[in-house]
Amino acid sequence: MIDGRLWMRGWVNSARGCRLTRCSHAAKSIFDVCRHLLAILAVGISIAGCDSAGSTGSEEILRMGLTFDRREIADHSGDVKLVGDIDGDGRLDLILGGLPQTPLSWWRWPDLLLTTIATARVEFTTDGVLVDVDGDGDLDIVTADGPDGANLIWFENPRPNHDPTDGPSWKHHEIGAVGGWGKATALRTSSFGHPAN
Image 1 (cartoon, one colour):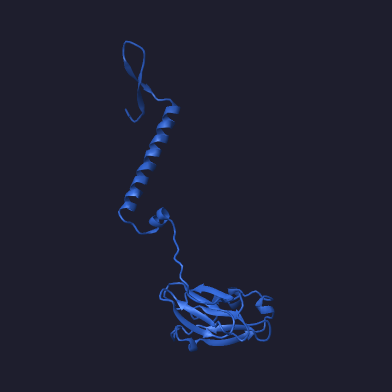
Image 2 (tube, helix red, strand yellow):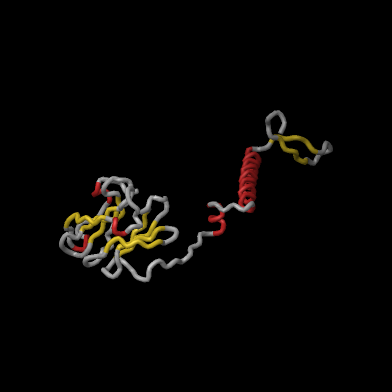
């Protein structure tokens, strides 16, 4: 680089040997591409250096791939399957319920402590939702129980005043009849006027 301009050395068949000539636009663009590639390569080497230094963050997951461990939490199935932060610790907990012999329960993550919340009259359905029904800052459970009667049920999370791992402290409220196993009326969190957490 001379006087802020890019110059290149070229060989010519003359007695004078080599001389300085101005680069063509094509040569400039090739140099620009090479310069950009070198910059990308330098960034790549820098990232690789961070990875080899023992990074355990998202870069390692991207490099090594995402893996899953199988953990069986229940020996039964259930129609209502939900995931949400029941105890307010910032971790997602698991909720499962179905027939009377497989009650509505939640497993606290990560220790998988089992808490039984309620037993179905007929069967808890697949259309359950987690929503803060009463606006007290915790997730409650709303689901249908059977195809008829007052089958839309709200299970009020005992937080913030009581421990949600105490199963009997979950209050049971009959909201009304929705019929058809709760499928006649779609359960939506917006129906309760409070956003889900």
